[in-house]
Length: 329
Ligand code: SF4
Image (cartoon, rainbow, N blue to C red):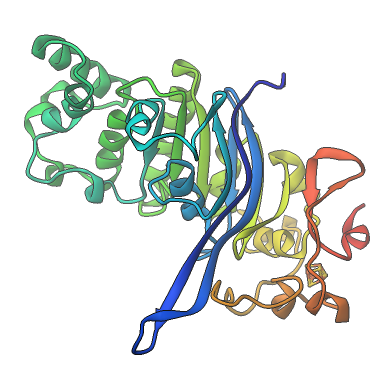
């Protein structure tokens, strides 16, 4: 793949002060995202996977500046997003759109689908009313819905159809980047694959770049070129999708893979079983954040934080584990 970077994220941090006491002073810090770096090439899909609470959705919102990051750099198509004046963000968000897990939260239940899908054009003053109505019907067709949906309300649709409406709105302004934040987590398994196939088709048709966030490695594998595994605010492993599945290195990645159901359990590679809960990102554990759940933890794991380093000098294969050499074969 030629290196044509669309999104560059460098050392992104999102720390929230926790306040308490009579004077409402800061008593702790939530290290929700704690120094994340990655790039996404034009036309590529980067999957971010991790258990709930690992900070992956916060990364999405910080990139779009729906949350103001504590520090770090976000460069989109050569433009500095972090230091961009708020007034300019509205224009850039035409090119960076997001799909949420629950489309009901983002679709105004009092508006018809036609009005909802027309809204991006109205906000940005694009087209006449007749143009907009035509574009709305085109959008519905692109996402596999009938044109009579324009006069109906979101609650009249199934969960999968509502997600199609959410996707239609997200692609209305021809974005370059689509951030998909757990877009199929709330759907039945049979509907999940339909929505994933739709996203893959739209990516090809519209030349989209995707950042695809999910807690389920099986879902991420279906759509991603590369995958970053997050644990407690940090990336612990990143690799090309196929290689991450065939040669997982970090004990957390290995445990996540073991938890994927397979049709033939006899063929399943059992690495490690994930036990316990993700620790709180408020005052996270010292050393390697995974040490309390890691079956291989040694003394230094609870003291020294491992760096995210290339494996075998491959800049596309990064792992943060003191003992990674033991897991590379
Ligand atoms: Fe486990 Fe230690 Fe590696 Fe962390 S650094 S994943 S605790 S072996």
